[in-house]
Image 1 (tube, rainbow, N blue to C red):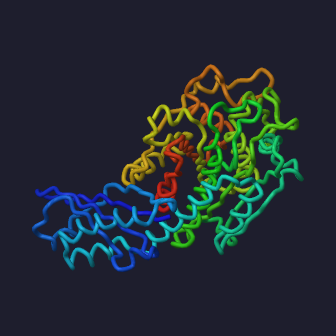
Image 2 (cartoon, rainbow, N blue to C red; image 1 turned 90 degrees about the vertical axis):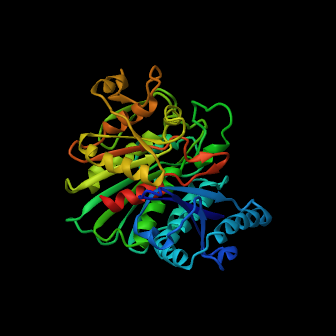
Image 3 (cartoon, rainbow, N blue to C red; image 1 turned 180 degrees about the vertical axis):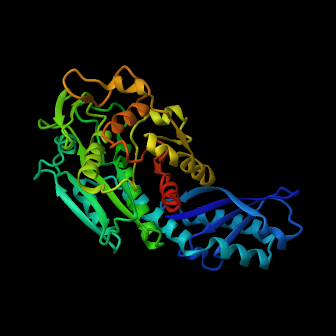
Length: 422
């Protein structure tokens, strides 16, 4: 796969022109002779003054899939080169190459290529996905694996994977050397390798349910980027997720069943297709009970949790919410999203919402059929398991990560830049 990054750069002057920089992967043979390609949309009279006043305002990812024929890619690149050579300038070429062709950008593009390949694998299952995770552990990190078929420690994730022919796993990735004085960031992702909905079977086309592990793939990619670019030195980063398959069998969890969590709360699983939030309960409980040692911590969860998030944003942004301690980080998250083109919209969780998840047989139920705004209610559900003094941010990607049967890299750059800055 070839990934081309487009940067929109605006010169803050009376001329008010824009330059589109197409920064290509140098490892692709076709780009070896020209490591940087430029499209210039307006006339430039004073090239030498350009770089003093430019500001990157947005970034968009464009994908050329392996399925594209070389003739198509060659045609596109020829058109780009024709535009570039009309405005050629040695000074502009050398200077902008120095700004944008750097190891961090190349690492990001390489990571997106790896990410797409695993997400789009149609035949993956919990066992094969576990092999992928094992191959992605940075050198300074350790991997702890719990086989949920051999332990009762993670009861909610076990309930989700109960109908699968495969084992379910709980994953904890953590630093080999942890400094308790540093900020600790706990990244929680969803790792459902295929989501049929369970006994609350989905209707219609389910071919895209192979991507329901995107949340976990995102945080693994983010960790690798932070580690390779050495942005994790002063931060303790932990990854937590349950690898499960949500399928139908005579052992599958039935709607209405009640399960006790590690924190001794009871959950009525009203709908087995609201499984992502259930798996993340085990992750949050595990962090609260065994990992979090001081208030200098933050929990961030990210996943394709609800289709409702897609509906209310018209598939243009993801949804975020937080507890009161997490609000301090929200403006930064939104601003980063605006700057890189991975938009985030904030939803307030009001106190009145919590009563809507009351159960007659348990402490809480995982869904309310009478409520249409499930993206808010999923956040409300998860927030009840967060320890109040720990900041928590919830990101629901919705369907923005998948378009025209192709995965989009939405979320990786957002979370990477956010963690670098907090």
